[in-house]
Image 1 (cartoon, rainbow, N blue to C red):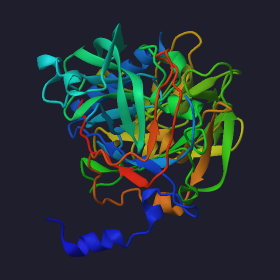
Image 2: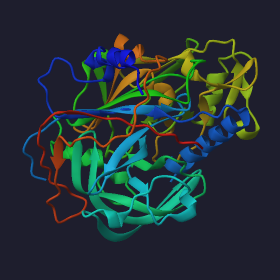
Image 3: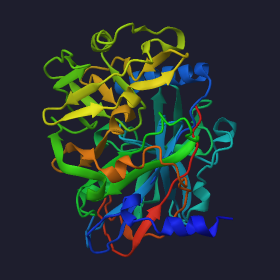
Image 4: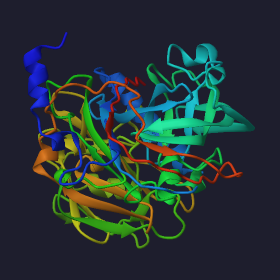
Length: 461
């Protein structure tokens, strides 16, 4: 039972504490709260997680009629001391909620099927026969990550997220996954990049909404919390918020600095124009690009650049074993990094530079070596960067924006509190696919009340 005094204190908090729109007339809207993944306390396990991340990046980057618009937000779950941020959505009729990794570095929505068998363990699975709106498109689906693969088929069903309901949304039903790729209660992944990357050939959920004016503004924005430097942090903590269809001015200060995506959008990538470490400039080649990826914990880059970064840190050295590609450095050293994408300069907190501690004196840095394929961004900026800014992903013009975090947002770092729990909630904006082509959606949105779709999940690697 929740103590009445605690419940009363929650109700007394201002709405903007939870990412709700301020100074606006009530509209239909929602946001996703993220929970962090459980961080391995053992250094060996942490090293295995680091290796998995490095391998994942190499695999990942190597190779409707509208009526009214709306906005919304969902709370996020932060798990494992900032190792992962993910949330929930609901699929089918009747709707069933699933926890999924939120990933701006890929474009497919997929969930484990009830026919997955022992390879899916005890995770919640999607049962097509239980949904009256399920449609099998009979198209094979297969996707490979550094830590495993998933196979199944492409289908359509009603998908709900942040108070938006999209009927006939394309996604993949996975009936075979590599061992340990999914751990309860995470059931799949929601790709938030562009359709051009979709292995399933289906338009991503966010793009279905944004491209057909279902949102007040064709964008979504992310604010992530920090617990990596909090010695009293729990495995699961409140992780921030995703604002859909609007930006929340209570979470940032100043203006949003937008940088256009060059060429045809695929990844959320922008130019990287400058970087300093300990006040010293790191050489950045002309034309260097960086992908902004919520699905990656740390920051990957070319070996020569990573070497140059740690050259600015006395007594740093390449790590070995599970930590190959990373560097160690004295924990007593405060490392300051600043980056620019052609506009403002953004700082990365020393707390985020320190990925983990391997001994009483040695730390592992968040910047690590990786290689990407031809035509793919050579840098991948994950959560170690994103925790330091309010990030906006805009549909048109295709661009990424950053702004400084407000005192309201910063106060959430290490603050603890009630971890969001998975719920389905009430739909406040409905989207209907009236197109014959499964990859194109005509949208119909209706307004009602604000919805919190909160997420609680544990994803152990």
